[in-house]
Image 1 (cartoon, rainbow, N blue to C red):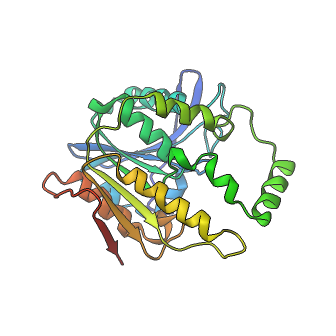
Image 2 (cartoon, rainbow, N blue to C red; image 1 turned 45 degrees about the horizontal axis):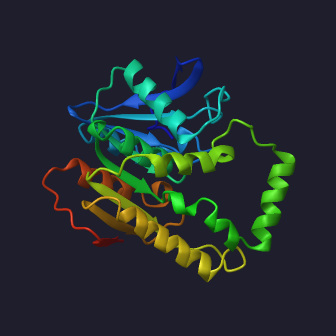
Amino acid sequence: MKHLPSKQDLTIADQRLCYTLTGEGAGPVIVLINGSGGPLEAWYKLYPRIAQLGSRVLAYDRPGVGGSAKPTSPQTAAAAVALLRGLLGALALPGPYLLLGHSFGGLHANLFARLHPEEVSGVVLLEATAPSDVGSMRQYQSAAQRTVNRLLNLFSRPDPNDEVSHEQQTVAQIAAAPPFPAVPLRVITGTKTMPGWMTSAAAMEQRRRNQQGLLALSPQGAQLLAKRSGHFPQMSEPSLVIEAVTQVLSIGVPSIQGVQYAIR
């Protein structure tokens, strides 16, 4: 992780947050939004290349993750968006922003773009959770997955304010928000699957349909298939993630709805 920028702390609305800020240039600020429970270190393989794209790059730990303090209030997507905008304002980082949301962080990027379209230049959804994933995917859990989840909850009690505990509110907030704006959008989907005893063909098909739903959010949407990746393309195929960000940053890149780029 030698290229990861040094971490700093800042308190926003009585919430202490850990963040990194690097890069320079006049391009849209790139905001890296982690998955649930994922610390900012998960982005380390994108550096230093992502900091050389002509933009400032902000990564941060949401409350209760990594170096940030425990959440002081329920972490719905609306709360996360407000806190992120507070951090951006405190750091004097003006929009528009390019939002890169991984997994559960994709829900936050989704709501941010809907609530503040004038502040968003583009979005990259990286193995992102779709609103339709929340709740519906549980019906496909295997016995092994249910057992693991029960053990995790037994030995590590979730924080009552954490974002997963409020995921239904997050989905409701997205449903009640304005439409997703017609901004450049890239949906990166990993194609490697878990062993059969961990998941089912029906679950994978549902997941595929949900990813297609994300692709349809914008008429400027395109899907990039991560052939060597499961849920963490930023770790296994960082060049693909950089390519997606570069496409969104590039004004002249043609955007055709439904096109799939199989980048190997």
